Length: 588
Image (tube, rainbow, N blue to C red):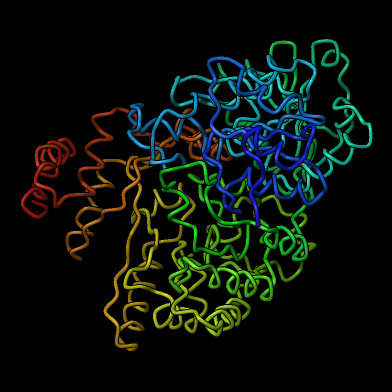
């Protein structure tokens, strides 16, 4: 197995006189299906195209963008596996000291708003080469959106980048159709009917715009100046995220417009098997002398499925991967496990049999016609949909099959488990405790307040308590001392200091000392970000409390980590502020 070429010398060694596609990414080049550009590159390679990877290019001029010559078909541009601003900056808007997607975790190897900058450099290098943007940054910034780092509403990244086309979501099917049609002589301007894409319109086309059945969002100017309009736009975007009933969406912006086609349809099991069966080396490109931390975390993992129907307010997965679960076949997963175990470096363990949520494998509606007509954001909130088949038997059968692979020592489940679903199957909890936990199991209760959990679209604390009791009991039954690693979010919309004080007491009484704390960071186009910006629930338009002041955000975090001596002054201040001095002795 070999890598896709990442240097002109490697292109020359392959005997190519030109390349068809140049894929530009803000990440280091890692040939692993969890790295988006490697995935897209292998898909295009399987189509017979000559693909080159331009990883973390210099952006102060366009010299690097000319390395491979003009691509015959297009430049494909992505900021990387994360939004570049989230990758580079903390919730305090301070530069991060490391970047897990770079060699040696070196920071600052990508620009701010990388999709825009890379697109501009590609256009400067070859003005007539089509530029197609994609990835999580393009997906979540495809309409006018609130940008936390500038604290304002920005235009669609499609308009700001001046790209020709935007691919949103997981783009394999879109990119295959785009490349096939360009290869057959179509022009980029003709590619306006592809699902899972958005395209820009200039002033003349916008003035004459008439698309039957299209839904027009409030304009970019309207959402920037009116929180009701912003909330309305959010609602319409989410209501039209089901590929089986979504309309074309249009948003005008200063005389121009963005037109979004309905989302791509879910991939079939055969398509998933094909993609994950492509010849990935699962290694970093040999030009790197230092390890890529993100690869070290996932190099021995196997993806079981895509998609998530949880619909958590603070998560982008529903908009990026969709809520329909797309599962690989057991044979495909087993074959990947066998290949992984045959590599000379392999220790004999699979680090994660995972997915966005570990236990949604093969889950779908009992009557798919109901699902195809549904516009709800979550299949499990506020209660599990009666049409959802929560059967864990296919997943249990797969886990047992993998445990039987020759040479395997252990196959862990390191992805987060959806606790409300797991409680539907005691056998699953038992097998996770007995066979798939290495002492610590990750779960994300996030909070205990019913009000806050409702805003988050997460299950109640009673679900967490029942799951914890059953997992610990099953661990004891298996003769294993195991613990839960708990994830919480501080300063999420809806969370007051009083709510956080109640959570701190809950944790203290149970001797839980959270290490894994996420300070809420308003990421573009997420449901919770709309609430953060407007103070309104986008569906009900009811007011939601939002902790925005940095002092309060710090106090909320301190309460979560009540056990740290350095947090005592902030905790004392917080408890006095909410008139709960009685809790000072209890917590401290």
